[in-house]
Length: 294
Image (cartoon, rainbow, N blue to C red; front, side):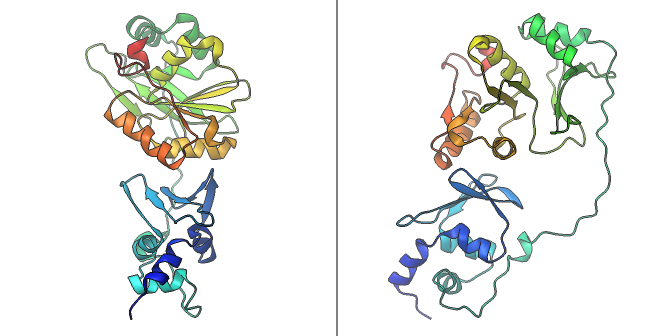
């Protein structure tokens, strides 16, 4: 069957999130977009009248239009996708393809276990002497219990918590000056990172590591009010988006402070393409990251 140019144009302007939710997709609103809950790196523009539908998948760099989405994720042919978007076949029922259906999961209880030392000598030596962080800042975090030392390895543990104050994960940083190590504690929760919150926490700043985040805090201590500083432990859009959702933070209150290198700049650029109101905070070109600058 031949599809006309007029049919293709009409299909391109359909509000894709509303169409998908009417066909059983579980989407959540984030700013001016929707995120597919089963695949939180997939973002769908909430296109208004006169705007074309657009989607982008951060994890793979893929993206496209309304017709492409239905072909990719609903297993339709080109003709079926155009006709479905135009509402021309009401008797057809579409479901996501097998590849993207939610699969039954066997849930096994796995508790986070952090073997912590009874002192933090190596933590202080590494963070203060090697990385240049202020002693009082580190001491305050150690007293609060959010930073500690791993017993067996001497690694720094930057712990993070759920809304009930339960430890749900930790970013690990080695304290050896000869061998750099970064990792995440086994069974840590996804979508979270080490945080420092000031006041209401209504503005969110995202960094590639806890040490970068603390370096920035140290350099801008007096101006950091009503903010939430978060380590992504890399460049992870899901931590940005999940944090926004948990705390109802709009895109205009998000500050992307990733490294001044190819990965950090591309990460920020992709997010700002989807959320133009997000702001970029970057080191001068002389420095790669905030700890380098400190």
